[in-house]
Every structure is written in C-alpha cells, then in structure tokens.
Length: 284
Image 1: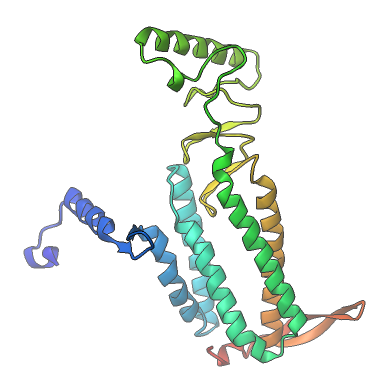
Image 2: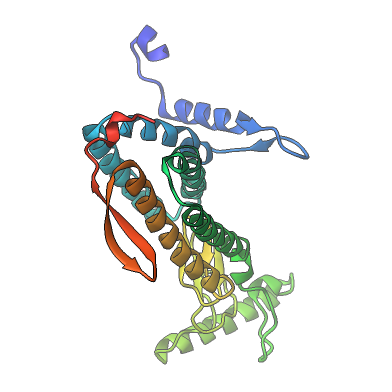
C-alpha cells in the first residue's frame, strides 16, 4: 500500500521487522494461555484444501497442481536442508494431508460401495502408521547425547569448573583426543562442535544443535532426528504408511472409476481401476 501511494520501495529491514512483529502477534487460544504459531505451521492447513479444490476441476488443473506441488515441496525441502533450518512446515503438511485424505475418503468413498473390511483395514494401517510416527517424534529427544563423565576422567567442556585454568586444560585434552581419533582413521569419541563424548555411529545434528546416538538423519517431516531410540518406530511407520496410501488410492480409484478384476487370492478379489475419464464429472 505504501509503495503504491509514495512510489518508493519499502526498506528491507523495515519489511522484515513488520513480518516479525506480525508473526509474534500470531497466537492461538490454548490451555494455559495462548501459544505462538509460525507461518510455516499454519500455511499447509489453508493451502491444501485450496489445492485439492483446484485439482478436482478437470484433468488439466489436476496435472498442473500435482506437478507444481511436487516442485514446490522439493524446492522448499532443498532450501531448508541446505540452511539447516528448523521448521514445522513439513510436519504440519503431513498432519493436514492425513486429516483431509481421511475426511474425503470417509465422507465420499464409502458411499460408493467400499466393503467394511476394506475400510477397517485402511483405518488399521493408518492408525498403526500414525502411532509409530508419533512415538518416533516423541522419542527424538531421547537420542540426544547427555553430558556424562567418561571413564578416563575427562569431563565435557560445559561441565568444567568456572576457573579459566580448568576450562583450558579440559579443552586441550579434548583437542588431543579428537586429533588422535582423526589420525587413526576411526571415528573420534568427541564431537568437534559441541565437545561432548559420543558413542560410535553418533553424529552432530546441525538442525537440532545436538549430538545424536546412532544418527541416521534429521527428519524434517517429523521435525526431529532419527536415531537409536526411534529408528524402529520410524521404519514401521513408513511401511504401514506406504501400505495405507496404496490401499487408500486403490479403494478410491476403484470406487469412482470403472474397476476390473485383477486377481482372486483365497477368495479375496483384487480390483484395479480401468477407465477414469468420467471421474471429473463429479466434482465432490
């Protein structure tokens, strides 16, 4: 508005301060007081219904929305990963997607003759996947290496005495042990960033700013690190999540499209979609 009236560009620092002030005032009512939320956390909640509505118009809008969404997600993920940013955008994208998918499926698809056992199977796969992902998210902090004394008596630098002499001695010992480990070709037992004694296969996560036991990777989709305490829950959640997505897609397409019998296994008929040209005739 100011730029349109005055014809002058807004100073970048002023614009940034305006956004920070607006984000600081953006809060939602919560038990125990209002909680602050970020743009990344609320963006998927509103953008996903819009994308779904636009994609359902016809095959062309579906193709454009599908490709554009994939490109935007990949770019955003690459941008966040390169800068090691901590965000709840991907976490909320998953939650919002699951809610909208289940809402659309339960409201529309069961009306088109989906068998109860198929619906129960889909619900079971989804529930198991969500429980595993929730446990993986809750256990992410358990992967962080705690500050403990070591067998050789060397203490973490943050545990050193307040005197400068003791702190310098501890720092020298840590540097010596780190250099010895690097020269031997083995993983050093000390993190070069936070100066903590770490276990084998541990690593420092730049996003969480902590050392993680048996570090696998930082999951931006769960907003936490995958390591020793939650690796099994994470893999189990992925397996059942993939099964739920495949089953849900097959049930939806075979319900709204013309299905054909692909196989009959132990009396269970496996249907696959054939002709979906008429699917866009029903906007809902």
